[in-house]
Image (cartoon, rainbow, N blue to C red):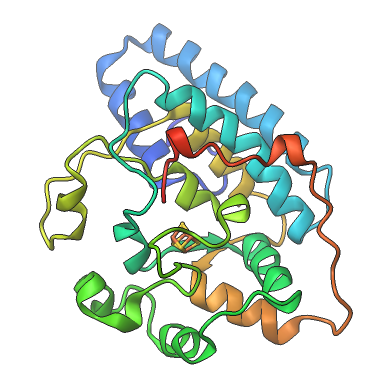
Length: 240
Ligand code: SF4
C-alpha cells in the first residue's frame, strides 16, 4: 500500500479501498487521503495500546469498533438480522485477544460443544469443509444457540460485528452466492489498528479459542463490563 507501510496488518478490505482510491484520485488528493488514514490509524492504535494483550484489550477494541460500525451502517440498511446465523457456519477469523476473551467466558461456565470445537480446530485453515457451510453440522460455531442467535453477543468477535451485508441473506448460504458486503472505512482502519497491536494476530475462532483454553490459568477472570458500552443493539445488529 503506497504511503501506508506503517500499517503492518491492513485488513483486505482496507487494501482494496486504498488501491481503488489510488487509481481514481489525483496525486494531490491521494496524498490528503493517505494522510487522513495515517492520522486516524495512529489515533486508534494508541487508544488500543493503552491496554496489555488479552481479554481487556479485546473489549477495548470492541468499544472502539462498534460505534464506527453503527455509524457506518446507519444509512445503508443491512439485511442481516437476529436469528439468521448463516455466516456462523463458516470459518470465522478472530484475534488472539478475542480468543482469550471467549475462553474467559467458557472458563466462567458458558457451556459449549468441546467435541465440535476440537473437530474445527483440527482442520487446516481455509479447509474446504468450511465451504459446505450449514450442510456440514460440524461447521456450526460453538457459540451459536439453538435459536440461531449468538450466545456471546455482547462479546462477539470483531469480524462478527463488522461483517454486514445488504444483499439477500439467503445468498450467504450459497456456494457462489451474490453477496454485497458493506464496507465501512473507519471500521477497517480500526480493525487494522487492532491487528497491528503487539502479540495480536488473526486465527480461526476454533484455533484461537482452543489455544486460549489450553493456556488459560486456573483462576477465573472477572469480566468487568461497563454495561452502557456493551448493550447489544439488535435492531441494527451487524450479525445475529
Ligand atoms: S461468535 Fe457469535 S456471531 Fe460470531 S460466528 Fe459465533 S455465533 Fe456467530
